[in-house]
Length: 343
Image (cartoon, rainbow, N blue to C red; front, side):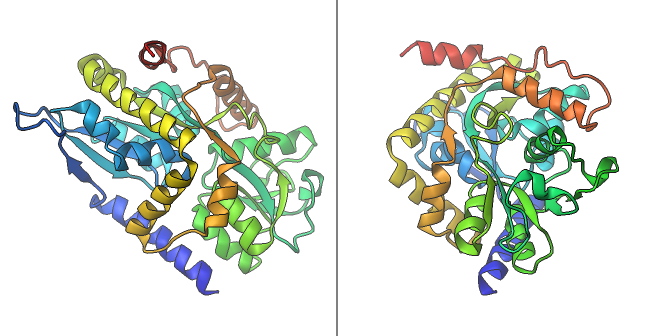
């Protein structure tokens, strides 16, 4: 029982830090004494495993090195809605977020553009050990939770259930959905028998599997467009992109370096992420959990716009959206492509 109490405390702490604004850390590029620095570039991310590029880019100094005399400010967020709120109010310039919140914001007229991918995969469908759920066909009359209503993971699971003739109670179906459950809180819900299953982001799905003997109902690469759907994208606003092209290019160069580092240095990457989580929560995830969760995702710059459109179409089919989604103008990877091609 102590294990999940610590995790809940950690999740609550992260939410509190982000809400109070004390998660910001400002730094300035190493050459700042040569000339007056420009305004800080405000970079957002989540303290999650699939945000490895963001964490490594920050911890290894890649962003600051590329930004040079222009300073940087980092803010971590507990969920995509808070990230998008910060972006829309102008308190955030660029950063890492799941595709779902970004797509939903874009389709409501919000100013957001995807510059590239940061990770693919990282969604795991798991069920409580004694839930009676061994496959998706067993969800009838059962319950599941997700981090948000209509979030990336929610849509991935519900579209798979719909193909089997099952729907959530949100649309009058027989499968109960509990939304807005922070991933760390899922641990307590599984331990107390309050939920039967979860569409969980990594490393929480693997944590439930290894620490609580949860059943893996669908592996990350068997989830709806699991291999090609970016679990994390790097985004900014068109306004910031137009007014600060050099800063955006600098962050993208740092992003490229961070992705390459994670691909070549798995052990150090996982250690750095666990150290970063410890700084925020005073708790570490088991090494075995991180190592296995790492195999259920791909840190990459490769973006699949067709997968983003497929996800949006599925969201519309599930009635999370009122109008058919048109993502024209949502993705612009030209700057990142140019950086990658320059190698």
